[in-house]
Length: 414
Image 1 (tube, rainbow, N blue to C red):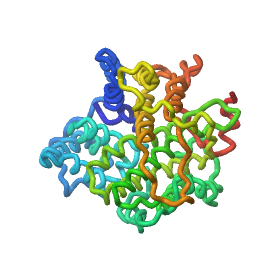
Image 2 (image 1 turned 135 degrees about the horizontal axis):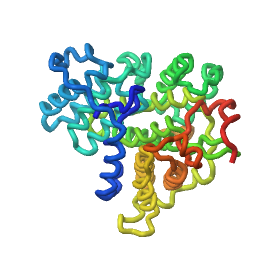
Image 3 (image 1 turned 45 degrees about the vertical axis):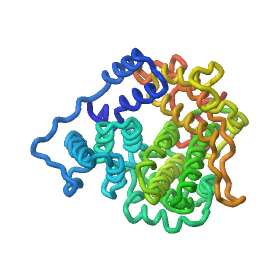
Image 4 (image 1 turned 120 degrees about the vertical axis):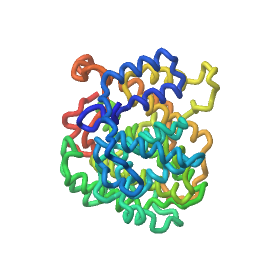
């Protein structure tokens, strides 16, 4: 199958869905059902072009053209095989190659997510498709992940800098963010996307990531926690609960960062962690730099940690959430649950943050609560007509520039 299931660049999620439910214990019949559902919506891949030979030297001659997807797969399969036992490091180095990196960070994190699946499940084939997927993308950014900008994001990472909570607040107050006009489809407005990229590039520099293992671990926990807090705290009081599609991808992509970090030297770990942070800040700014409305349920300490019971413990409430996510026919729900489950695990074994008292960390997060509202809220089926389901009262992910008052004028009340 092709990397995109339609002509609008929507990503093939077959591997994502199958592997996520498999990891949570889906039975064989459910795996087959999911495969059959996805199979019916895929496009066939392009044929391998016999007159095209992609090499490490001419890679840029074929980049951002989806017709070359099979040839890119062939090239990267050869490179990973040649790397022997070091194939995972070779894959990550290619992903972070300045020619590939801006594309790999595009498409709402999908090439990075595909890379994470390939590494997590020890699959060179999936990893090769991830690198090929990156190479056939168009860049979502003008310069944010260029060689010079990435280097500039890391001017001096020895100090504590600002926390992500402090950075988000500074973005909200920045005149460039304040002056953004409302657009119901912000990614279609170049003025909005250009401004968001400038804000993300500017403020990501303030998030210091020292190149040490302890600092990387602490900063990752901070990033995952802020992504989860953003995911669960965007609903304005008095309105129906919403879960935002793009913010959700900030969370699901963050799941794979530790898997990628394990394949890189510590200096490059800091680099990709900062890059992911910049992309999260960009998504935040594009959607109007929304305020967080943190309810007591969200910020209550998670007393049902993912490690509180074995898989045979009937009192482990995560098992019910896992079962519901496996049964869901939304292709993202199970990925969200895995990300939140990782957050719960990390909450059980927190890493001490070395920053001072004025470094504002996010509040405690009830990861299980966020997981529960995900499976209870997102009830629509990706494999049925969406308009019909809306009439039936089914819920889907929310899109739009929810940092603006204009968005909430038409969003349903409770």
